[in-house]
Each structure stands twice: as structure tokens, then as C-alpha cells.
Image 1: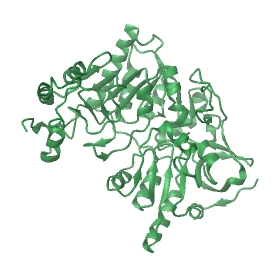
Image 2 (image 1 turned 90 degrees about the vertical axis):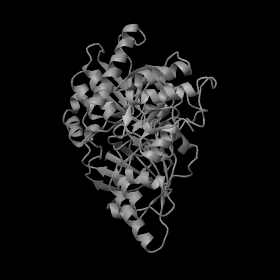
Image 3 (image 1 turned 180 degrees about the vertical axis):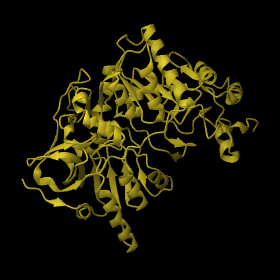
Image 4 (image 1 turned 30 degrees about the vertical axis):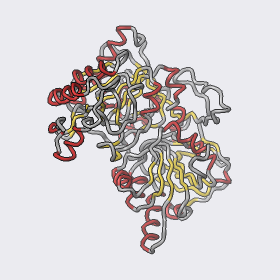
Length: 496
């Protein structure tokens, strides 16, 4: 079939006010980058004329500024799910200008299939190649591509010539059936392949092709510092000790590590460990630090949903694809984040917290309990199903004015029932087999910053005999109140 080639501006004219648009990709990897800025321009012009123009936007995970940023600044988003990291989007959500559903990433494709979000009008999919008979070869991210391609009324392809055709064969495209119907996911080894290497669609659904040559917008995270380095070292030493105890087998277990500078520090520390053997990953994303460890032989294989790499690092992968071809496989998010597979492989999850309370509940998403930071992403998928679920955070923020360990978190994403270990630069709190009182004492002693230990112990004394999980509801948020009123949690007052 002969496809119609469009400019990005021409493609954007197919997107009308009120439509639901779904994109390929997962994190700032593999998502379309040319059309959304043109949609934003249309929104701005329509608003100038006093006309409404907003769309509903669904993706596999976060995107880059060329999607969430430009559309947020143009006030072009009505509803968004399931995850984003863009600061302009964040401001719009917290100001009530965008409806945002924070959702476990493993659930997005299934909820679309079930019709929870209504119809998908147009899917925009980034490809490195497309055939005349409708085979779409994805780029650096899996996400929800096969589901949105099948469900949408029409498809627009961004054929990105920056992305190498060497990615052909690196995807394992597999869409789950609905729960009432599907058997187990037949992946029994991390490198098993059960699907196709492409997304297959009816060519007649393809509205047109937009040719681009735009790199992904994966950001370079801050360089490790003494705090993140110590967190990484603490986690690596903890895992090495568990291996010596026989809790982790001598061959080790697959690792999931969240995105960010703490995740990079953890990977570096594990890679440098003389006790931890070369290991595998079953994770959402591959970052630059993972590629480095693959080259060094410290990471053997990674099953993932995205190559969330800086441009220089990604180009290095393309240049050395003969080396990397048997080192990773790219899957859809409902597979990469599958509870079934996380449990089957005994994954050790390592994610980042904004704050933890003294009983082991984790806030990943909301500053001071109300202001959205990013979203839960896939951390819940892994935490609840992991063999060992670890959360890491610096013990303080804002130059020590905020304690990351608090009496009670005003927003909880991961409850004490799923969290096994909390780590700060101060130390490790192994919560396995501990009751609430024991957890509180351990977290305060091992993880809290020294300048906050006395304050947290004072709180624990106040509410010591108040039930199984002792709290004083009138004083539980004293640290948060002190910061909001005085700008310093050290000024918490338990006397009122």
C-alpha cells in the first residue's frame, strides 16, 4: 500500500477538540516528538479566537517536553494518564487546569481495552521502519503501542530517521488478552520472546506518515554526590549480606531500579561490588549506567520497556548493536511491569521515595501531601510484587529543612505491607518480620538524620500506648505544619 506523507503541521489538523489521542513510547523514549508541538500551536490560535481546544492524552509513561511541556503551556490538555515528569504539566495539575489520573503503569493498556477511558480516536506512533502491509517497527520504547494501534480509529506514524533500523528485532510485541480469557504469560527466562518484532495494523487505518529526525529527550541526571553514593553503597552492602545469608541465591536475582540519580548510584555501587556476581535486570527502563555495566560484563541481560538513554549513549548502542543484540529485549509496559512475571522471577525492586513515615509507609508522589510531583509510575507494580521491595531517599531535603522520615506521611502510595527495606545515607532499616513499634524504632535509629532523631523519638513517646500502630492524630503532622508555617521541620511543636 502507498502511504500518504504529511508535514507535522498537516498531521496536527487531524486532531480535533475533544479527541482522545494515544502515543507510543515509555518515559522520554520512543514517543512521537514532531506533531504535538503543532497541536499546541493550533490550541493557542483557537484560544485566541475564543474557541475551546483541548485533548485527552494517554501514553505508556512520561514523555518529553515536546509532548507534555508544549501541550501544557498551550493549555491543550483536558485529561491525562498515566504518568508524567514535566514541570509545566505539574504546575497545571496542581493549579487544577488539567485532570490527571495517576495510575500504575501496568494497568494503562488494560484500562483502555476495557473502555474505562472511552474510545481512542487517533494513535500517534514513532517508528524506525514501516512496511507496505502495516508492520510498524517501534523505536526505543514499548509502552502501550499494540493496544492503541489496534483500538484507535486512525493512526499517524512519525517515521524517525534518527532512530536506527538496527532496533528491528529488539522488540517483543505481545498484547495481553483480557483477564477472564488469558493464560499465563509464557515467559520463563528473562530473554524468552513470545511475540512479534513489530506492531501489525491494517494499512488502511494509517492516516499518513510524518518523517522526522528528532532524538529522544532523555535527560542527563545529576552527577553522583556523597549522599547518593552512600545510599548506593548501603543498598549494595545490604544485598551482598542477604546473599551471604542465603536469602538471595548465589546466582543473584533480577534487579528493578527506578529512574534518577539514586538509581544510577545504586547501579554503580552494585557494579563495583566484589561480592555481588554479574546480574540480570527485569525493569521498566535502561539508563546510561546500565549500558556501562553491560559493557563491563556486570549486567548480563535486561528485560525492559525502554532505552531511556542520553543521545550520546544511545548512539553508542546503535554503533555497537552487534554487542548489545543479545543483552536486552524491549517489551510493552503491561509485560515489563507484570505482577505475574515480577513474582515469577523474584525481582528485587529499588525505588525512590519523597518521604517515609516511621512505620514504613511511603510517599512517592505528593509534596506536603497535596502537590503532585510526578506520579507513582511503575513503582507500585514492582513494590507490591517484589521478592524484596526497597525504597531509598536522602534523609533530608532543602538543605536539612525537611526530614524525609516523618511521623505520618500525609499522602501514601505504598503501604507498610509492601515495603521491606528503607535506605538513606544514614543506614538501612530492614523491616521484614518487624511489628509497627519495632519498625518505628529501627527507621528512626538507622535512617533518620541525626538532627531529627530526637524529634521523632519524642513523637513516638507521646503516642506510645495509642494502639497497634501508635499515632497522635493531633500531632502526627507537626513536622509538615512547621515547614509550611516556619520553613523548617526542626521547629515542630508537639505541645499543642
